[in-house]
Length: 121
Image (tube, rainbow, N blue to C red; front, side):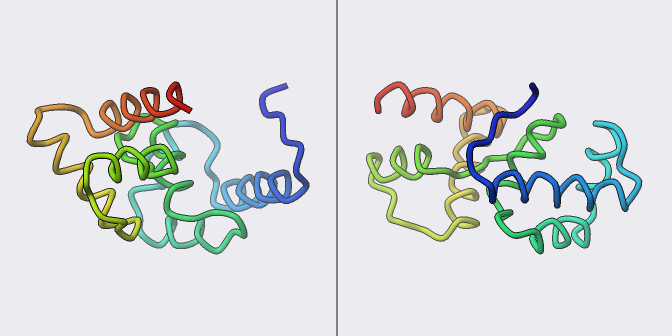
């Protein structure tokens, strides 16, 4: 079993994403990587109930892109560091800038912060 969902809406979201990708001829990891290059495709994903910017960034990470998918752990870490509560895109930009200043990969920094905060909870 590749995915274990206990919530009907999550199952419906997974099916809707699969249907969208299949309709656009996205068959492989490489196809999805390239498909995500286009804003129209990212916008199409946003029309799926349950898919927001975090989901799209996370999917990008799964196919080899380096994104910061801001979740509750990254928000908590930022708040602990004194960063105000910012909208998703602004907080993602803060993490991306921090990664650049530190010479780290964006996705690598995101994952390190996530691991740190998830172990603290």
